Image (spheres, rainbow, N blue to C red):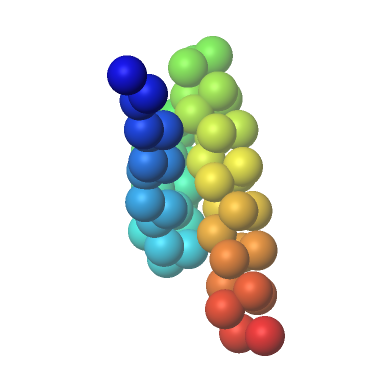
Length: 58
């Protein structure tokens, strides 16, 4: 029986991702390796959100 592909998670808004980045930076979260990894993940998500905003505006 074929399976249906999993739906990708809903993208978070640019404002939400930006707020999480700011919180990480203000808390000094980049000190740990986990914090640096999370920051990199957030930057990728932020860039995707920016691209989505540009696409919607066009």
